[in-house]
Amino acid sequence: MSYSPHTAADRERMLAAIGVESVDDLFADIPSAVRASAWDVPPPLVEQEVRTELARLAGRNRIPEVSFLGAGVYRHLVPSVVGEVIGRPEFSTAYTPYQPEVSQGTLQSIYEFQSLICELTQMEVATASHYDGATATAEAALMACRLTRRNRVAVSAGVNPDYRRVLETYCSGPGIEVVILPIDLTDGGTGTTDPAAVEALGAVACLIVAQPNFYGQLEPMRDLADAAHAGGAQLVAVVEPTSLALLAAPGDDGADIVTAEGQPLGIPASFGGPYVGLMAARMASVRQMPGRLVGATRDVAGRKGYVLTLQAREQHIRREKAASNICTNQALMALAATAYLVAVGPAGLREVAELSTTQARHATAALEDAGLARRRFGGTYFAEVTLNVPDAARRHAALAERGIVAGYLPERHDPALRDTLLLAATELTTDDDIARLLDGLEATR
Amino acid sequence: MALPDDLRYSKEHEWVRVEGSRATIGITGFAADELGDIVFVELPEVGASLGQFATFGVVESVKAVSDLFSPISGEVVEVNETLRASPELLNSDPFGDGWIAKVELADASEVDALMDADAYTAETA
Image (cartoon, rainbow over the protein chains, first blue to last red):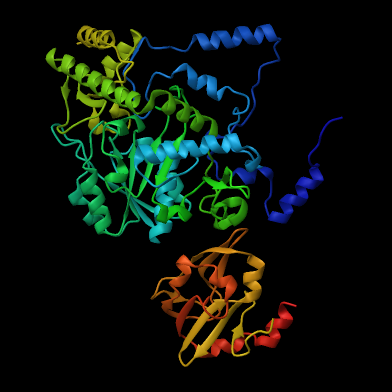
């Protein structure tokens, strides 16, 4: 028996009810260039043929031998215990359960995650996670608009360009204006956001700044927070979680909302994810936070238990007035981050951050000493650095042929950054990796 | 429970007490009972301009969130700050200490469109 969800007559009646001519008209908002016009599907294959075909496709992947690619996603050691914990069948779900209080173990793991994020950021409350760093940041902008009853947000040009595109998309629906606070990208410039430029923006709900910024530079967060607050705006800090082991915590630097991509905490770098977004804020703003929150309480017998709390903000209760109807969480990836942080501990995370910054400085010094590159900006950088490299695009491609990814090419999103490379180092970056990068740049001079 | 007969009532279960050019607004005992234990009230800002039957705040109970609809239009001159720490006053004394806001009336005749105690009793019967 074939399953037919609705007949042609059903469809006609539904189209007539909403006043649309044809099913195609429902997709009128989607540009025709990205619409599938015809399905050209090859004939069915037997299992062995499928395996052969998939192996052929997998063989086209080029796994670099050496990589300095970062630009928002970082290759860190993932201790085996992380895979062991998230592979346990009790935990192997991508989502929080629909009858949550019977799953005390899941709720406790999320509560521990929230506690760890609060400790890392020195904020008062953290959500049960978001889809990724970009969506968490866009949600923070919407949250700031609710808190300030303003309809305009400012974002530093030092925030990841992909995050800024997601922010534009999120703000386009509710009609929130996004203004860009430029950063000094000139050769020899600061590579950072100027706090003195904030006042001229006028009234905004928030100022979104990345620390470290997309170009690796450390922003004057305290001054930016003061400038934002002087105009009644919230300061949204987009942070890199391993850096928090070395840098001042955003909660101590005046941030009102903190967001981050949690991938560096025990999640492999992978095209398209899955990753995990982090968000933390002040308790006074908790009712405007999007997404789920787990709280600890006591049952009638006085025993500790965990619950989903403040659910009246959420879409299953508050419907169209919910704090967010478009957010989700990444419970399994949040568990990976929890297992990672517990496994490495505070001292281990500090070692990760220190080794990453040290290797970034070794690489920079080696390339500068050999006359192959020069730091573009002054100031301080974390574990990622923007370098002037003559003929960068050609050499980046030539090095890729040798199995070396020479970081990210900033000219891909900003032509003004032609002939620069954005190199990232982590604790996995070896001295041999640096030597091979140096040799490759030497050979392509 | 007998309703105070010096108040006027709206279909959205708010009450209003007019004294000269000023009006005090709250939610009815019926509304508070229906919501259950109220845990949070989002108050309007002093100086905010309210429209008749437009939303001006939010009440959150353990089981639901509801918008507050102003029964009359006008400018907020005072809000009940006590509710921030003690939202349960809406349940225990909805027509007294659980008042929500005081408003400078924009149009006193709007009150005529509201129900008296008998009409509201019939409405909620």
